[in-house]
Length: 410
Image (cartoon, rainbow, N blue to C red; front, side, top):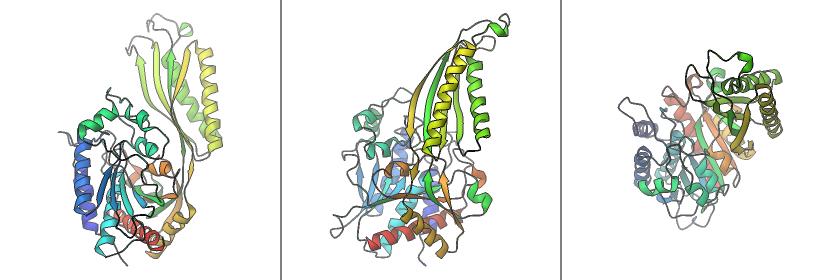
């Protein structure tokens, strides 16, 4: 049974993981930053060394293309993920999928395989959404969900403009996003959750992905002295904000649904220990694999904000930051993942992705699916993020099998 070059894959993961570390050894490669440029440069060098044609589109997505005169007219099989990171990140999130895509192509090339269609390794811009919103911006733009002009004009958390930063680091490409509509798309990723490890599975065949709703809520109250203002006479923006997070937790617990809700950021003004907050600004992240439940949860939040505003004597407004519907992946590809997994003697289970991925965007224009491998203790977006080398190799070998099946049968 054929396998990828395990040593090469693992070495590249750790080499890329060393790019973007600060003096305290924390890894941060935010989209279109200097550290991102360094990571992109290394990736492009590997793509060229593998004999691939390299294309960069206007939003900075990078593509390593394996094609020849016989198959150039066919729609490509696209593999990939992203190489930007969160702040103080681990080394596997996104990067594993991109480097495994490259490894699969190199393995097939070295075996003399002649694919009936091109194969493309893709690295999408700003998947994490830390510096620029929304997340998955590069793949969203690629499928036409956001215009190139709007995407390039996106202002980052540091006041930078994405288009200007891509120009500065040399990755404002010339290809139009969407220049190659995939025949199919496949993304290999660490699970970022505890299920596979806890249940003893090596491979997750991801059949769907949760819908995501991001909102920013602003509550305006009245600043006043923390010691002289009776509790019943306060317009406390901080208290109102706290009620939102507590209510969502209790509401979901009562519903017994797989919904999740997170208040991920919170900022008070004037942010002083002895002053009642006059303003609270926070984000709410709602997720559910069912569109109807997700919409109902959004309605519950909206009704809650109206009620709290009345009861606490505060003014509340909210802004939608991102909204993505749940995604069902292609059943044929999911079954191919299961077939490969069983043939190789691995335990597999079907599962839902709780995190957003570029695959959910590409699924708008092409049959898509994902392969998960275990994350130790379910930890991700954290320097403790870890997947055992054997599991990394297992996932890449399943990817190899599925790719070979697609490019062999057309």
